Length: 637
Image (spheres, rainbow, N blue to C red):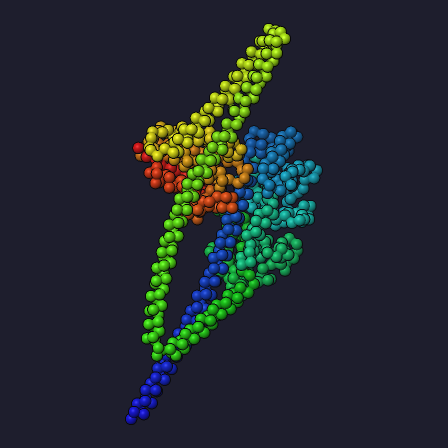
């Protein structure tokens, strides 16, 4: 009986092991599949998001380029030299008036480096005016060299549009006298329909825009996992990583189409509606159409359909699948090994749990020790940060002293020269007294002494003003009390001390004081805040030797507070940087020696010491003059 019970017990134990082993195998298979699927989807999504970013970037660049091109054409056409009014039509005009139109085309074309040609063609296709541009130079084509363009597609399409409106041609290669210009010049032509009732020529104004630089910019955006390709409505590449596949329709190579290389991809493009489309084979593709310019007047698009697709590197999906299978296989092996290990060690769980408990207790002690070390490190970091802040304040004062010293060199040097000249005059006068003083020598000496002493007095007065401004600013910056002060005076004295750094810059500072600027505050801190904002704009908003403007505006708000705004016409700040710009040690120019405490100190001074508010408004895409504005709101009392 006991033997039977023992066999039954062994059998039950074996059955339990089999069941547990089967469960482990199934669980390992399910988890391996989930690992495979998650890794596959994650990597696929990563590539797709990257391609979406590239697609959006290229679309944005195209919209900007096409919009600017269309606007340039409209601006060119909207000129009184081209309008008829009460003037004679083209065939009745004298050479001087024709020359004035050519001069206008020359001057306009030289304003933009992408303009390669400006033409005015009459309704029969004859060129009436033509100016070619190359390497920053303009060439007015003589009347006998003008051509007839009636056979060109862009003339036929542009002339069929009702005036006044524009048409954007397809993007192709520039041709001269029936031959393609080499090196290739990707070109888009914009036509503007002119009517006989309003313009002196009934026909088309056509501007050729050279897109070589623009295509090179797009080529720089391309990468291994985001290969940018642009295809025209007939499936020919106008942009490809492999340049040998481009411009098949211009070179007479009908085999260079996407329909020939990848028919299924071309079919997906043609079936695409408005939204972005994905296409998969052994690679990943993101498909879309480039935005079209729309004419509200005629309820139609002004340019042909252009497809864009972003291609991953070859066989990327297979690589992703192999990688996901590898991770899934490793996960399955690990799970099976763990399951077997669990089954083998099941009888000693209690001891293992005890060991784990002891280990956790030891790790807790170690964790407490690490936490203590971390707390000490944080305190040391805070002390170091405070030291950096003090060093930055001293650096600001040092720069202030250097600026005042530089400014004082000029008036003091002028005074020294004037005194030296006066001493020379005195020496000549003494010699004259010894040898015989004449009236003319006396009069000339007195006049010269008076002039030199006057110049010395003027220069010393300037030096005294600088010393007075510096002294007052130094006293204010060390004053810990709130006193009555005038914002206009603070800013003007600050600009005097900063003059040595500002006069060598192409960035000009403009000040506006609209209301009563008196309040009770700490003028020294206000001076440091405005100085940091000015230097931040000079260091980060403008490129080296770039022209620009910084505006400092002071006005009273509706609530009776004082608003001080510092605006600049620089490059602007993107949203990502705005979220961390006031954090300590954040800087976008660490390679230039910046430590990232300037705006952090401004924020701390305004909110903690001056009890005010600091607001940042910035957008690199703003169309107004100023791209960035810091607004400080300070209470009057």
